[in-house]
Length: 275
Image 1: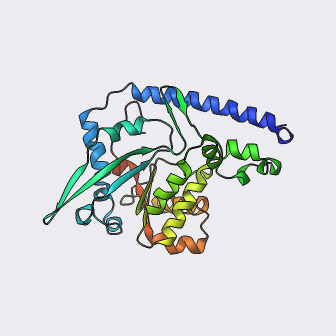
Image 2: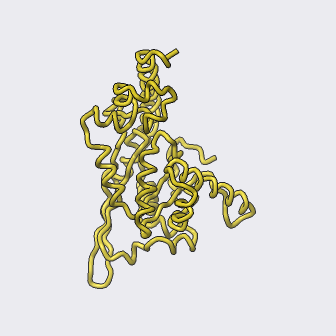
């Protein structure tokens, strides 16, 4: 049993990490082999610049419309999936100019930030694989083991690499005004991120969070009850992973929007089934 053998624990995690890198490399190569068409770039651009226009009317009222924002805005992407597939789409987009009265504002897209490293062309670069906090390790002995905590917790591994990814991510969250979480399972192994976002929302009533959910039923059709249950389940899950008490979650719920990702982001990636 690895519970009494730290070396066996390290070897097990290292084997899991190798398999993980191999899997991600295969997936990255599959997408990289497909050309990005101009039609795809146009749709991707629309889903980024104007996604709020695809939200339900009441949800649109909860966030500022870009056509009315009298300042230049940065769109910052945080990529947690280790590949550069998303980055390739962002790289094809250009800054956008908006005109309000006699003023010109420029909205920019910042190159995606990979706080957990990246796997490109099969080569891992500062890949962070592990848990969010030591207390997620079942063995209490390992929770107190400095080497294990440094190697297999995400902030610990970034510190071991000598980078500033954790502090940079913290700064981004502290300055964010609208958070969009897309394509994430809200896993507890990224709990440190969700807790920071939860704290940011609690600390500023003007901050908004949009949770995009792929399997959300049509709220305007015959599945309103199912939509209601899934929406409530997603809100409860965010509260859990963000360590928000029921009282605190109730206070910020008006700042949180749950939206169907497939209606807002209509880009169909090559080789991905729509079912």
